[in-house]
Length: 246
Image 1 (tube, rainbow, N blue to C red):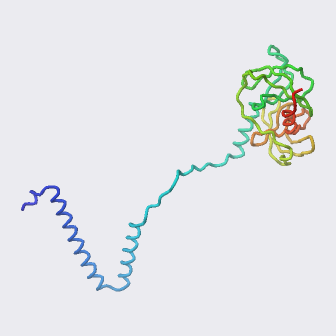
Image 2 (image 1 turned 180 degrees about the vertical axis):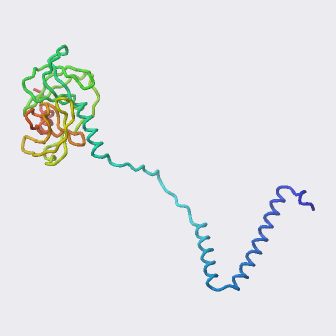
Image 3 (image 1 turned 90 degrees about the vertical axis):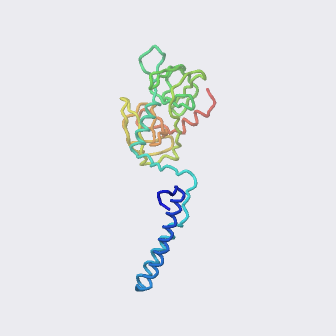
């Protein structure tokens, strides 16, 4: 029979047969050669064969679940930047009316409470709050105490979006902790807490306008500036917010 007359199936079977015969011949020749070689070479060949078999027959490793991407913690520089951005968004200016240009005070916007806290008791009962994004809204005095006054907005007032801070108790504020605040010219100043006593938090930071907030690197409020170099602890704001409206 001429090989050119074979079909594909016959060619495949012929190839398998040739490979099979070649493998047997190779095995017989290898065994014969190994019988005539030193034991050291024989052991080496056996180890190679065993290793090859183990590698081929090793079960595949199945990883269950979806691997979680690794994320690195933000650096102190990134935290300071985020805190400064939050401080800017929460710092507001208080006016007597919407058509006046003379500012009465600086305040801190508390988005979750829909309120503004200022460090002054001499402001009128009705004010207009100007936000950092250029919008404004009227507010009414609701509570006062500890040198602070809280103004609330109506339920229908449209307020800008901003991150809601945690009001950090002075029990969790330690000397040496890094803090930051916005100064009167809008620049950011960083420093550390120098002293924590009953009713007051001190920090070696620039002159912070009364009513502006002192933040930690998590952008949470540590205190509210009293305008004379110290800060009213944030828990005073927490107590005012939970007190009955006056």
